[in-house]
Image 1 (cartoon, rainbow, N blue to C red):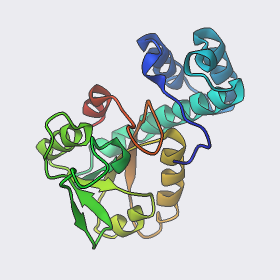
Image 2: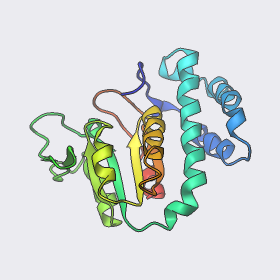
Image 3: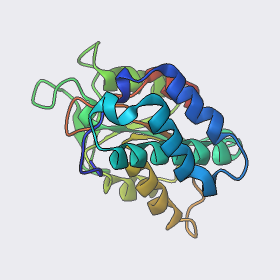
Length: 207
């Protein structure tokens, strides 16, 4: 969890995310992200809805916009790739103890979902990825990415906290001389150390 605060955007209206997507598709967005983020926070009362300071709400919205922009920029190249991996956060599992039957892969320091709980978000997301030909990794931390990169994937779809998506993109950029990798990010709508959530429909559209 990169942020020093928790947020839950699940109560925010769908038009909030539609507005983010609309603004993100405009040209020359980078110099205006801060201004747009402040506008959206004020318009949707994000800070009051999720109970965090205005400055933190603006940070989250800025990172959400940054993610949308990166997705748009890399989308065409992403669609040309063949070998893809889906990276999921272990904190979205239904159970964070021995009731979760995921197996641990020492080679990549990540988990493999065993589909033990039908209503587990990670189980549902893993099935979506596998049905579309993705190798799926459930990550206990961002450091696992370094090991997975070496398996030669052309593209990654990563589900994570908005700031962690940004940090992961920076990490992948540092490997650009050795690996040509494109990415798509799906941000969490509720963060934390457990019980985190993301939108399956958003994931499906990105995959």
